[in-house]
Length: 99
Image (cartoon, rainbow, N blue to C red; front, side, top):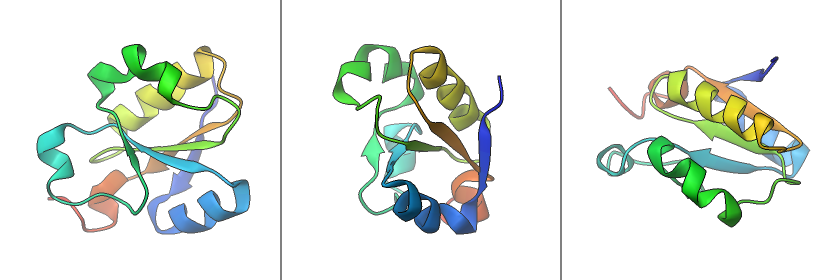
């Protein structure tokens, strides 16, 4: 399964061009370090039980600390029928927003 890898510094452009949303799948303790503006916050472990709160027709850019969990989440969303799920490569670390 091929998941688009969006360079972290291009996240705003991707969201704007795709009329997308940002899904932050980090843990609540990580959200305290800062999140992207407008991000929907659902930790990876809560994602299966929270799918109904997301719009599967809306392009979704998934973000985490370094890009690993967000890639898993983007693959999961795709398997669940989301039309367009992408991974923010490098995650919040690449933006300097998390150690």
